[in-house]
Image (spheres, rainbow, N blue to C red):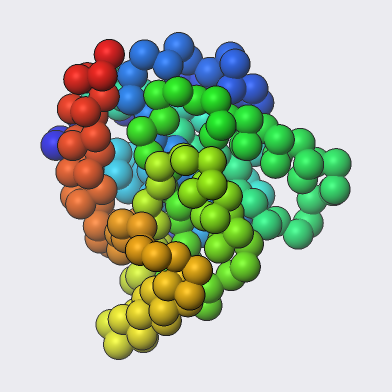
Length: 202
Ligand code: GTP
Ligand code: MG
């Protein structure tokens, strides 16, 4: 699938005022600074559609982008960011969980994981929660350009081993670099497949 157009639609804090759920939607989530906004930009081939930053905590709203005038990409705030107040963190938590639990057109959530890091409890707990709630998701390893091949393979294997202590089977996994655009074709193809399923169900 080629991405021909990608436009910003709206930012907000409440799933109830997101665009009407009439088109397939894919959201990006993960710890602050993992590369959510950058990967959206890489997918749509634009530098600044989603706002990125070297400092964690950049994205603070639910941001909708419409792609090829037919489906949505959604940039969400990061979780696990230490430097925000407890109140703000609780607000983010509620905003994101309400969105995930109620957004009927969410075809798949992309859970981003920094390929450089060891499995983190916060990611594991979050994926467990998604599974409990029946929210469809895949895992997306990011920033692979920052690692050599051998270390990358080792890290991903270690991640799988850790996951398999808790899971009977692993979720689908994508391996990406926003910097080098690695894995963007695979993600686009995956979305294309799901888009066709969305059409069949309406
Ligand atoms: P929040 O919105 O704060 O939660 O962060 P985010 O997950 O949206 O991360 P963002 O895309 O803003 O990227 C964070 C930093 O990582 C930026 O400095 C990016 O340039 C860098 N970055 C993101 N993806 C990649 C990548 O694939 N490779 C490299 N080398 N750097 C990346
Ligand atoms: Mg962001």
